[in-house]
Length: 315
Length: 171
Image (cartoon, rainbow over all chains, first blue to last red; front, side, top):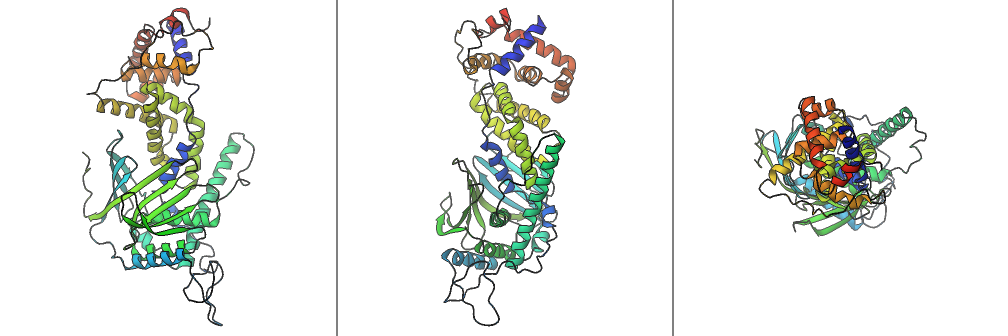
């Protein structure tokens, strides 16, 4: 009897798979990777209340002879304020200088970046004018050509319009991160209410300001549309962010000499790493390591320009 | 993906992850491969999260496509089936653990074509209607009905399942 057979199939398939459970870490790892690749235009358009004041955090200024840290205030007009940079800050300021001196991007409208992401080879084509992104990839049985992701990147002009003063940039990064966070919490609480669930997310552990700033800054650094001045400013912001660790003599997974910048999130426990070319400030590798040891790696291999969208290289 | 999207995405995976992994296991008939398919499906979903109206429907379609793509890629290499042992009556009670019964079911599903298997999984595991399956796969409801019927008829003759179908599930 067909009806009975179908019931048997139904029961059998559920009974045989009920003990299978998805790893709770998979979604977090995927989100982590996506966040390395997504900066929405909306986020860049955030009006920054109070950013103009720019007084929340002082730029660490090098002046030998005394100690100071972030937030202690800028040099005062009343007398010489001397600030001693930590080794990490010194390394990041050096990297900032290298980035500022790197040649600005020239060439065609389209920026082509090749990379290796875990087991995938990947070529991304970014339209510097519109922010559209094409992605081609190879490996793991995935399709070689993904649809164009419309406006998945800020445009080169939007990046160029970002502030490069350290305090203002930090305030901008913090504001856009907090706005996204607030919207996310409000939206999720609304959904919880709609589904008749009790509770609030307000009491959940929140990322610290420094968590936010580090994440926003490093999420921006990998993007090849970021120009030399903004890149240089981002390294200064990182130099101004507590908990940032720097190894000036590191190597990336391909053995290339690199400055390794890392930080472990106070709430998430996830260690984010970014490896930079010490001569240009360009990103060579980004990686994250979750509490359970899960590691995701992106190796950046080349950046070139073209006047046209190149064909899929993996076909 | 911004933070709101990330929260939404993680919420969806928390709610649907187990079911998706189980569906991947049934579609691939290979638990290890299923893990890869599951992760790749979520990866593709995350990339399009802001543009996907129905995440579950998107995952069903993507999962089916991935399995088909992989099957094409591996066409030259014959598929290894699970060894089917004579387990006697697989119902030998509810005490038969899922993990013990699973190889027999997966082996049996492995004898179906991809289309048959997908239809069986969507109809009887995911509980979609014939019309819903037809729309998802781009075939007619009649094709879904006849394919499902033939597939179940084939499954009930498989060594590991024959006793089960002979006596029914509720005895």
